[in-house]
Image (spheres, rainbow, N blue to C red):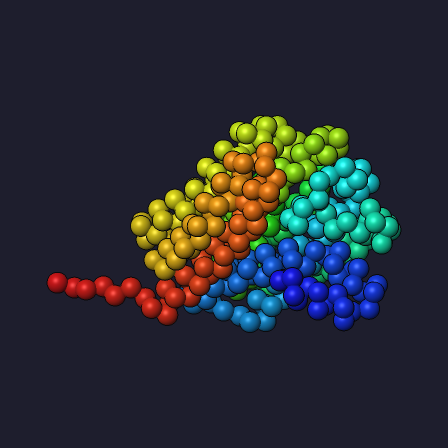
Amino acid sequence: MDTVSAYLLYFTLPMKLKVWFFETRPQFLILSVVLAFLGTAMAWYDGAFHIGHAMLAFIGLLLCHISVDVLNDYYDYISGVDLKTQRTPFSGGSGFLPAGALKPRQVFWFGIICFLLAVPIGVYFVLVSGWLLLPLLIIGAICVLLYTQSLTKVGWPEWAPGVGLGALPILGMYFVQTGTYTIPAIVASVPSAILVHNLLFLNEFPDAEADKTADRKTLPITMGKKKASVLYSILTIAVYAWIAGWVLVGIMPAFCLIALLTLPFAIKAIQGALKYQDMAKFGQGMANNVLFILLTQLLLGIGHILSRVFPPVHILF
């Protein structure tokens, strides 16, 4: 959601609804829209498209995304992290709990209710699409419910958003429309896993000192910011190498190469990450990281659509 849209909503919604609406951090929910689009585009490329299932699965994904963000806000506040963190447009929580606009118990139950509303959707899809969806849903539930208070304390917690809000939503959207998993679908989900991993990874840099007080073990803490910035850069480059490599061997559709158009954003994100000591440059890097992550996945989805509309022509000699 852009700034203009956010302000329009702010001035038209009643005050209490404004607070609850922005507690969901709607600007971050764009990621769920892009994930749903990519998973559906992959299903359509393989000849399976079910608008009802796509919309219902998107609602379930959105509810889970809201749940993990809201519960993150709650646990950050009760642990004291929210009161110590250096808030940026991309990290540091919504700010409503420290400001006293909402009560912790309200926020906790809001997050839990959003998750519980998603459960019947998951049960429905297990019944109609197949039990092979169940392991995916269980892993996703663990990532939602245990991420902030547990997974962040065991080392390398970034895998959880990478898997739970990267690869699994895409595979889930694909499965509910096709009824199966395929090697190409799994391959196509890996860039999203890396991208969402990196989204959280870079956003953790400003929170590192505050996160230490809650005994969290994020990569910027366990590796140190210098090594972490190098790892971030390597993973960013790996996204392009993965896409190009699998296109060359014929597993990913050829038009997926349009995702490489986001390279300028990736370069700026890497430059910002390597300048982590300069918050002005690092902030620019965080902004470009968000654009790189969203646009790369959007273009991958468009690439699948274009590859079905314009299939490769084989010339026989």
